[in-house]
Length: 359
Image (cartoon, rainbow, N blue to C red):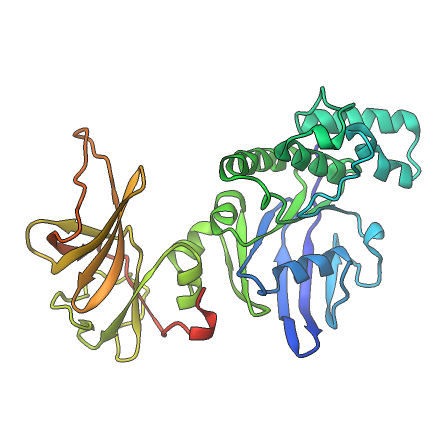
């Protein structure tokens, strides 16, 4: 059932709802067969962008080109896309097989071909024995697979997904993320997924497009957004980041110099800037050298221990492995004192995070 994916090109897309600018001159190119995640907080414009690509919303300006063909003037059913909605939009009065057959019958496909494609689609999503089952008798994960099978059954070159796993519990969601990633490799179709879950975007997508207030803030591979955020908003939204006030000498209140801690491509510290450091890019020990600190809070999270530290008049969140090669791991307790060090080449300097963009 492998289908060659088509490229999707967005050119200067803008959309307003009254005074609200949902999309603000967004341009983006998606390669054939690519898995792209549209990520951002609520109200960032990611769902508006997806619905505009699908044809359920009309942009005020800009162009949408799928497979080299402008589709702005076409209704959804003529854009050759598959769509998986957040609530799945399955027909409860139909069986699983009938749900899958419905879009094919609407397209005038012969009954013999419908039977063949339904059987193939059920096998693709690993529901071979559930064709006669009613929708209400399925689990959440099985319903998600049916919705996916219905979207791919007419072999779309582009598959759009609007937070399709948000209703699943955490463990099932993680399982379905792995299955969808594997299915993408098997199908070869172009996938554009909307999600507000950064873990989902980073673990599944080839590239991530991060939006906020209708604007595209950064596009790149997951590791690129995590390791080299372009600004404080990206650093704050992708993972967790400590922001510490800095001046010409380094972190305000710290006696430890920053020279070795800064990433090679980071800006130099200057008054009014902030230092961004990931919780896992620090070490804590009983002995100097390092910045004197004190543990305020300590939480055990299985593989990691999460600490809240006070150092130099500022507070930082830190993550430490809770297990080591010797068969244990130091678990710090509130009130304990230690010495904090930043791992070399991991800290970055940013303009302060705009309070209106805090997430």
